Amino acid sequence: MRQLQTHPRRRVTVRAILNTDGGARGNPGPAGIGVVLVGEDGEVIAELARGLGVQTNNVAEYEAVIAGLELARESGVDDLLVRVDSELVVRQLNGDWKIKNDRLRRLAVRARSLMRGFSTVAIEHVPRGQNSRADALANEAMDAAEERAPGEPGLLF
Image 1 (cartoon, rainbow, N blue to C red):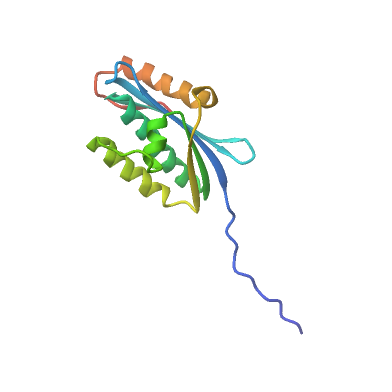
Image 2 (tube, rainbow, N blue to C red):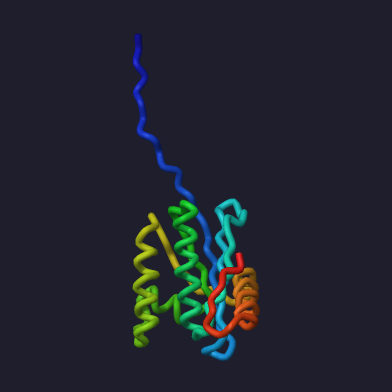
């Protein structure tokens, strides 16, 4: 009788694109983030819009990337392309520009730590027009943040 060789279970690689956007009206002002995670088949895996209370635009951009990375990790993504319309965030996370602001530095450290949790991850700058769904979600979050009490964050969906 011939015995078949068993093979270790292979891990399925999940590839995805993450679009994020953050903004603040008034800078600082009512802030929000928008996140869209799309699988390699083009189907939306998850979307997120969240109010942040009163923040600066740059803090909101970083918070969007962090929330998106956490969402991708929770969704089992292995290989990730992060698309952001903030050149500052992209250049700082890629190490091209120094981070002089302590708050942004702490957020960058958190984002880089999350990025190390993927098999492969790349972050690139895209024009706002190529980030329209994340931008729309961020604007919905800012609209809702303006309606809440100052400083009160909230999750839209």
